[in-house]
Length: 352
Image 1 (spheres, rainbow, N blue to C red):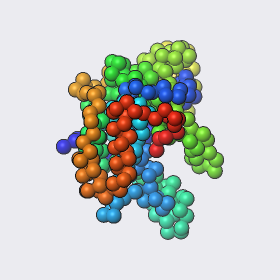
Image 2: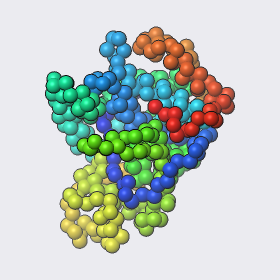
Image 3: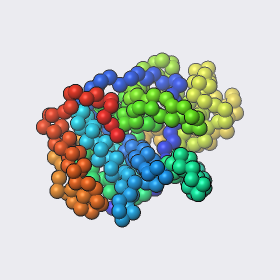
Image 4: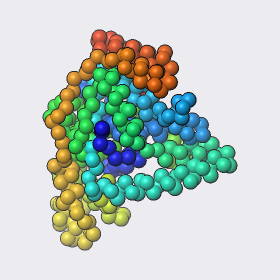
């Protein structure tokens, strides 16, 4: 039995305005091992793979399969361009994360009501938007995903606690080239290289606006970002505590730029808290979460040959997937295992 807690959304700290980022080069990840924040990825799937009314994609028996459809397509496409994925799963959340999880549940309860009202009046656009905000992962979904990945031969790592902390540790050890996540938290955990937007390229609607922005894969270097900001990683963590993390409430009115200014002027969180009288509780424990994360060396990064019979039995036999589609994905994986990856199609254009 896999020990998980119901996962109900993506938050993470926002550092967009102060980190150094560049566009991912064509074929930059070919042949590279990349550790994926898998809960982050699965949340994308169950949020976006939905019907026009906002219902999750389900089979004829009403079983939700959004997460499995997404993971099958994403992993086969990754391997088709030469990426060697490792899927890292969260373990038991730190007790300080309870407040964040409670807030997420409250937002989702409100979103469910808004979704139901939109369905009643026939406002499908609003219904789908609100439905995406109700998404959550169950223990069964996570177990299904782990089973499918193992059938596909993809390495899976069960983190003792935070998956991004584990993935960052693997990257620092040199077992992975980069961590892939939409969140910036990996930088706080010391990840040398973070890849964002790897599977969400294209036009994205801006929240609350009738406008779109173009999203492209990007790479963020921790070292370059720290040098550009003129701070240490510990100071970056202190900035995050002021801004607010999944483990603590920040200070009202403090964003990335103001936090950076305060840290550069006063040096550390102890001094900032004393001078500014910020009510930051348990900040030393939050610091420890990022600077001394709970991690394990009990993992393998070796890809294995897919067990096609088990994959077909699970997806086609048990869950009603179309056999042709599943076999196409298996073929992509098999070709990559033989060194046959796509050279003609852009690696930035083929993701789900």
